[in-house]
Image (cartoon, rainbow, N blue to C red):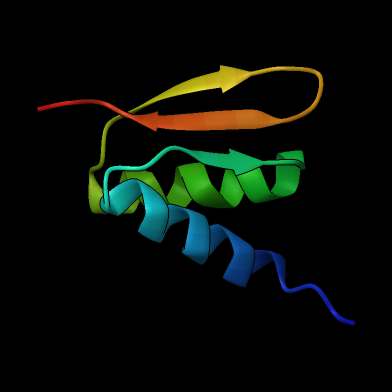
Length: 60
């Protein structure tokens, strides 16, 4: 099975847009998520751990 990292990042951004937190296991996916969130001007709190990064949408 081929894993498309860009598609994973897009799905995680959709979760964030819907008000849910999202998790990225790799730095590559986390960077793709951050890039997309910056384009969309969506503020999030990023919590980075040894296991990956959590993206928590900020309340407006």
